[in-house]
Length: 237
Image (cartoon, rainbow, N blue to C red; front, side, top):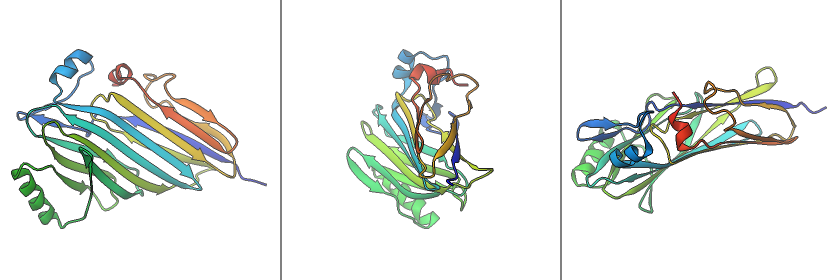
């Protein structure tokens, strides 16, 4: 007899510890009361898209976080890409694409990495500094010096093993765009050969996104889509 699997999928949206864009010594952040027209006038760095894609199959979850920013300022801007991943997950790949040219992260001794980053910034080059807050890599942070007019894409991949608790799995995704994204998209695919008994997506937004998650479920596959508009993102506390 097949043992059916249950899934809980949780989304957590936060504007904390995401992109922070220092401008003339200050940090520009969009506020809930601002109009879109005002945002476009003051934002010198635009968060064009923030996408999360996660596939869960055979107790293994593979997640990709991708964000695209554009520096509209005539001056270089220091951009921080800060994401939180579940405890126990491991990062399999991180890349940064600047105007079509892709750079992949490499591990350097701490002082060497800081020195190389400082040298690149002094020469006016695009450079990135990758940090992790702990060995378990719960927090992933990247600093990037973005040149004027440059388009930058960050892409982080991580994997985690799902452990069954009382016959079910839980999958959590932390969304940290840091500012309003023109395109915010989350897609989660669940593939369970043994069969799915039920799929539950709890309301973690206190009713601010009623009807936004779109859920489709079959006997062995399920898909959850979460794509709030800019207006819907703005009302999130």
